[in-house]
Structures are given as C-alpha cells and as structure tokens.
Length: 502
Image 1: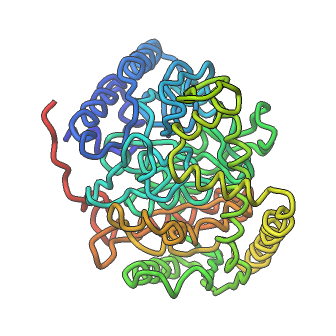
Image 2: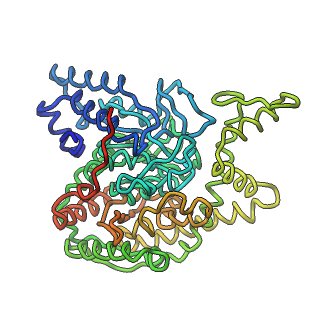
Image 3: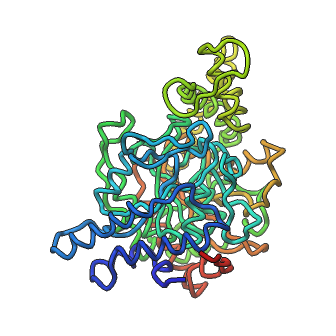
C-alpha cells in the first residue's frame, strides 16, 4: 500500500502545502488503491478518474504559480451517491435512477470543487438511504474492510468503507437516522452529523426532509473538523440553511483537555440489548474523559423510549412524499406495462414496481398509510408530538451537561443476511442515533476500541444545536488519549485487504 493512502487528510494537506508531494501523486495513489481493493470492498458505485486527476493537476498548477489555496486543496474525497454531481452519474443506489446524470452540482459538491478537492467517485449506499447495512443497494452490498463477511453499516456504508479501506482520506455521508455515525462506528472511522441546517441540503436526493443532514466521514476527529469547515455555512438555495457562520471547529478539535466540561451519560442509551464488549469499551472511554478533567453525570431522557417508533412514522411519511417525483415521466427509469393500456397510472406503477427495491417499497407503503385520511392524527401527528417531547428531554439534559455520550450502536458489525428477514431487528441498530435527528442536534461518532469479537466499537458525542464545536473538543481529546493507549490509530489494527491484480 502506498504510504500516501495511510496519511490523514491533515497530513496530506501539510505535505501538499510544503510541496513534498503533488495532488496528482496523492490522487493517483488513492485511485490505485481503489483499483486494487474495491473489487472486494465495493465501496464505490462510480469512479471519476479523469476528472479527479484533472482537478488535481489544476491545484498543482495553481500552487506552483504561488496562489493562496484553501487548506484541503489537493486532498481527494469520495462522495455518497445521494449527492448530485454535475456531469457524473448519480443513482442513490437505485435502479430507478440508473444512468441519470444531473445537470447541476449540490452546494456541497460546489464547495468541494471551490476548495480544490478532487472527487474520486460516488460511494455505495442503501437505496435512497433506506437501510442500516448497505445490503439494500440495487447494485450489490458494500463489505466491511474489517471482515468482508460483515456489513459496513448503513445507509452510508460505502463512504465509511472507502475511508476505512484507505481508498479515500475523506468522504461525504448523509445522516437521516444515524447513517454517518452508525457506519463510522462499525468500520472504526469518524463520522459527524452537523446541526440540522448547518450544512446545505441543496442537491441531496431527499428521503426525509426534516431529518436528512450531510456531513464528514474521516479517519480522525481533526480531519472531520477540517472538512466540516469546508462544507458548512449558509446557503440561500436551501430554505432550511442556518445563517450561522462556521468556524472554531478545527481549533476545538486541537484542544488538549476537558477542564470544566460536563459530560452526561444518557441512561436510556445503554443496558439491555447492548453487546457486553460495546458497553465495556464505552465505560473505559468515559473514564478517560474523567482523566482529562471532565465532570461526568448521569441524565435521563425518558421520551427516548419512543424515539424509534416516532422516527419510523415520520421518516417513511416524508419519504413517501419525496419519492413521489420518481414516476417514470420526467427523469430516470421509464417502464411501460407489458399489456393493457399505456397511461400515466400504468407507466408509473410499472416503473416503480421495477425501479424500487423491497425496502423502499416497504417504507413508501408505511409512510403513505401513516399520512392517509383517518390515520394522520393517530400516527404521523402523534409521532410529531413525541418528537417535541424528545426535544424537551434534550433541552433538560443539556441544562445539566455540556455534551451527552453513549455507544453509537448497540452491537458491532453483524454478518450479511443476519437481519434481512427481520426489519425491526435491523431498525434497532439506529436506536442510539435517531434521537439526535429528531431534535436536529449535532452528533459525532469516533472509535473507542475493539469489542471482544475483535471488531470496532463507536463512541457517540451529542451537543446542543449550533454547538458543533463541543463535539470536536470532546472527540479530539478522547481520540488522542485512546491513540496513546493503542500506540497507533485503531485502523492500523485492521486486517490487510487482499490486493487484486489490476
């Protein structure tokens, strides 16, 4: 493996600034790594070799000319395939969008291009971001680099696996109920869900508009902070975008102690259903926070008991509305009925029947039922009331603590097929991450060690809305203490992937 692919984004940025390496060299090293291992991992749906190398060459030329460039200029990145990219295929891992090439860039992609970051390709995901394992991609599952027989989390398993397999130093994910944080937990990477509205949603293929949020995936807390500052900030094209300036995240990630920080352990996010090795890793990490000067208290959020049920009414309801645009009429797949009249209704039915996978159909049916006459108040309306209770629980908890912590996921990565026939068991993987999406608050997952099965465990940090810097302060300090204990980054303990012949 090229030494360049083992470097963090911050290290690569420094090498590029000092002109010890060129962006073309860095980008080519990662493209070579993709060619060598992605046949086994399947982190990418589409690669972007020519455009990535052209963008890298442009950065090198501008740097040689003495231009003052953004900090991450020349550092390559992968982008989840739910984020539209002009001139590049964007499918949301669905047959219904197979081959679709968007005519515009998402705001995130525009900011990446302006920052001089070559885009390596588009990463695999659960279809329309619906899933917790990346087993629901229409183009085949992504595999966990720690164990190719296990899931990489979902829906953003491709982005997390690409970073964990050293195919990309950075990636963009999206988080509707934990789809950045949960894949980060099971792959030993770092993932951040920003405050809702802190990163533009313009150009994301929407699943649930009040829950979706894009954010960074990386191998270190500092790298996530660097990328967060690139993609964050107000966007007039997004009506949900916050006007708050983005800053102080990198400085927070470089903090050295937690003196005066109050850390709250959420009693409802632990205990029954949590793997013993996950609990042990979490408890050790909490002790390290204490050693860094943090005050640790226990807080209760009783409404979290209903978060999973509320989420799986609100999210499908919004998804059924958002996915109504995929009708076989305007873009993407169009299927005409095999027999009978060709009408708008029959074309729509044939297109959706062939173009959507089982999980997408399941959620559309559930959401449409929840919104139907006679059931709206009983289901969707009640779920929104529970959402308000969850927000109040968070407010009360943050009155006692600066940040809240929990395991990111109840278990480590499970084997392929283990939960496909039991959707409820699959949905329970998001039990610790969903409350943050319902409340719109930021969350971060970083690796806290290995469980007794030798697989990574994630540690989740939550902060009040607009206080994303707190995540990076706590996460940065904990990461340094853990790395000192391990003697090397956790990903260095992962088994080496077999390199295929090119």
